[in-house]
Image (cartoon, rainbow, N blue to C red):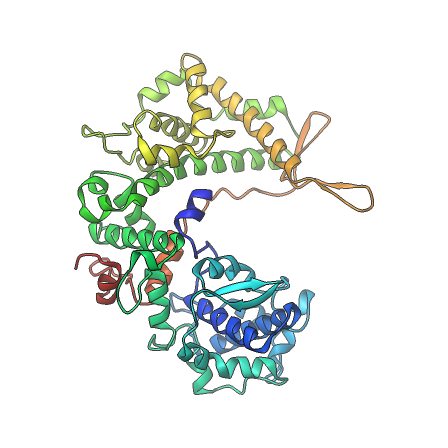
Length: 471
């Protein structure tokens, strides 16, 4: 996650809409001009977000791939009367559009600061290092005006309607946002004029665009991205990919992603077994994993796994091959073993990002040591050891998060709890892998006119020019 944060600055897994970046950009300028303090900014942000949700509710198609704005579901549930839309912004709890004090700005705060559109001063929004164009501030002026006054939005309104998410992207924020994400000014990228974050975001966008071009058969952006950076010879043969140092870093991250996903899936299966049993002993969990693993030794299991590199030393999609015939726990264990094997073939920056900055519990180096220790022992023995390691890691994480309450009690945040040798769980654990933010970056790039969702023509003419990718 640390590597992803470094390689995709300005985007998170929950920043879906380009429109919100320009909204907060304009709000920050307004807040600075008016000298709004933290509380006034908070009120303005919440009311502007509700206004944008109400506009989306009025003008956007819920069946459109882009969907509706943040908060529209809550707005539909609360159903405030026309002219009283902002009542759900000015309240808290179950009658508020968002339980968070800053609403959806909580999701865009860090990314907007990284992008340079907003900065924070004592909790108040202020203009960032990139000046907000007058056209963008003018565009949001009607919404900001009604958000500051009492009353409603007076829909329909042409000035407000153009703020909808699905409005034809000829709005004044299109060009400034595409320039920011591509790190260009007047259609050109000047290396020294941009920060390291800007250059890195541009590099990842270029890698994504080129990977999409080279893999038109891919179904999703992450699939095309993985095919471009992680597997095969493109990363060293294609001039654009080979010329971007971040390609090597991304190769390590994408390959490590499989190991992370295997651990998460295996942990979720263990927690679900505890829930099924209501209270599970240590021996019960050992029996559970033993019953899901094949007979034979770890070395014999490994002998049947696909190769991780081809004859040229380029990575093969071995993990994808296993996942096509997912066999649950045994597939998770096999993926972990493949991750450990990757350590033997990766080099340089790719190896460094694959391993991480420092050794940690359950990482590929950890599994590599288990691989050596259990090579001639049964797969079931390895499985029991993995159960022990996960339980120990769960306890370590829970203790790091412990909170001491004013009344002298403590709060321990964990899905799994142990009491008198028995384990019990509060709820299921999500088995999905963490996000690499590639999908979110691609969606935003489509919204600002750099990419398209069409694999036959994945990069727009504007994107080719601004990102410097081949036609």
